[in-house]
Image 1 (cartoon, rainbow, N blue to C red):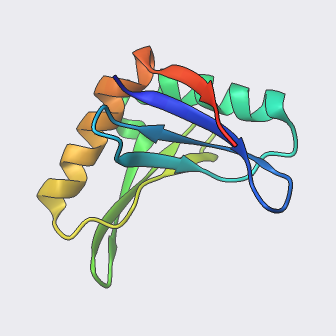
Image 2 (image 1 turned 45 degrees about the vertical axis):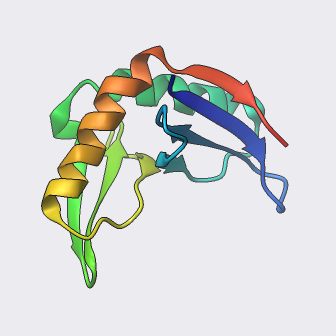
Length: 108
């Protein structure tokens, strides 16, 4: 079962990561100054992941990655770098499939 892990980083900012059922991180957020901000970010991922136009794919020196953006164009989360376009598209599909029903778990 997929889950959002909500945690505080070393700088004291709140962050979340979406993990697939196999434990692999498929999307990671930027830092938020408040827990409520991070929870709103998670809700935004759940909603925006259902619109393929909100995924911005980018080529990198070593492959491909994607950023999920809100309707206002603000980045909500980013993937790891994938070694192929096909793997990148599988990551997008995994976020779209898993985010809406993923539970939220607070971790240290």
